[in-house]
Length: 147
Image 1 (cartoon, one colour):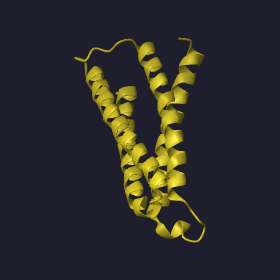
Image 2 (cartoon, helix red, strand yellow; image 1 turned 60 degrees about the horizontal axis):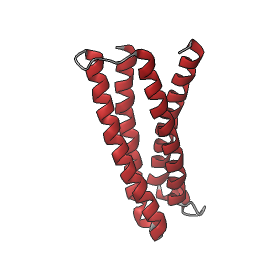
Image 3 (tube, helix red, strand yellow; image 1 turned 180 degrees about the vertical axis):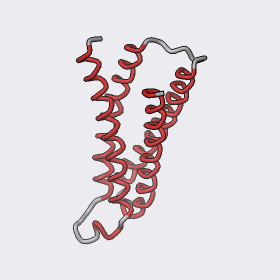
Image 4 (cartoon, helix red, strand yellow; image 1 turned 90 degrees about the vertical axis):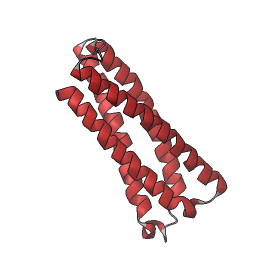
């Protein structure tokens, strides 16, 4: 892979993670303050739906670029320290994606049932958990990138 391609792949990966984390943190902040939308007609489910579309697009880009990064670095041996950390990160990502799938189903069910008010605190907690999980994943990525 050329240097320009390698840099582009890493930039797309980092921007995707920034969208996932920033969107989750923003949604969490917006949903945990009930007065924020009381007079403005703020629809928490609409915000959540928009985030879900951005989230899954960014996750798709990060999966593709993550595989590209691994291809550029070569296959790591799980017996090495780096390989062990990579394995832990990949397991954490798998758990994160499964949890995110459940979160997305909840968002679309709340939208379909019209129970946005009742689900607001559930959405706030789920986006807070998403942001917290991303911090853990980024920490593992930092260790992988810089030892």
